Image (cartoon, rainbow, N blue to C red; front, side, top):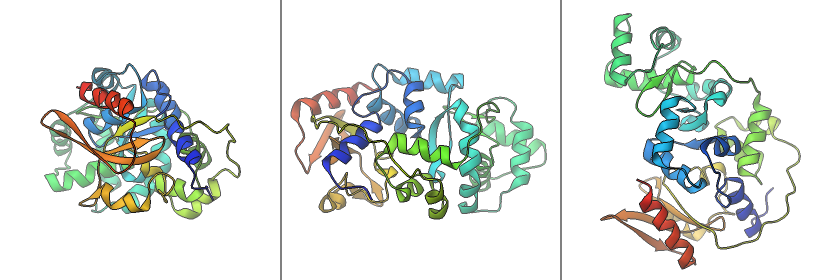
Length: 303
């Protein structure tokens, strides 16, 4: 059980590097393991909020150089991971994600992907190579088959190309995944770990640490961060209560999606959107004006 207190919210914000930003992308991913990256814009907004001195060009360069990759990981969603973490994370979560994926694409397609994906390829280039070895796919089939291939550890993504999965890196079990989760999202529960990872509850509970670090309680300092709709801050918890007043939750959702939101000391205090080159904020709690102005300038400057 995690108490619903302001201290919990600030601790979680700190664990996500939203209070003390990382100075480079490698340090960020060492601390948080994975950042949701449904597209480059979503990844960029999450990286911006957790780093200082990093530019969109730095993120693109890291993806182009293979230091960082995008792949289907937690909850079957696309995330940024460091190269050396890809193999073990996909080995743990890929089978769970594959079991939940629709369609009939299976091991044969994944084997063909491994055969032909020997260098970075565009989607069209990869589909052409697959057709050449007797695995033609239409667009509907391709979406399912390439996702399944990622779950099987046959491919991952750069900025706009598909890559072979790195073969280097350590091997870890679920207890290490739980430890890395707690480092990035603690204080948290085994049920939070299951929600974040997509693992079954019983497997998550068996791997979850019996004790959690007892760090000194942080001060609430009015730290403001603007987070995107795909940001993983709220996705790490089954019960968002410590981070979001239940009365405000309807204001945060629209058409089944989480809106871009404003977080103050770990608590959601508003939503935001871009309009005509400006950032418009809808508040449902106090947001320190000077901190908000600085965050808005940072978002506008991330181009």
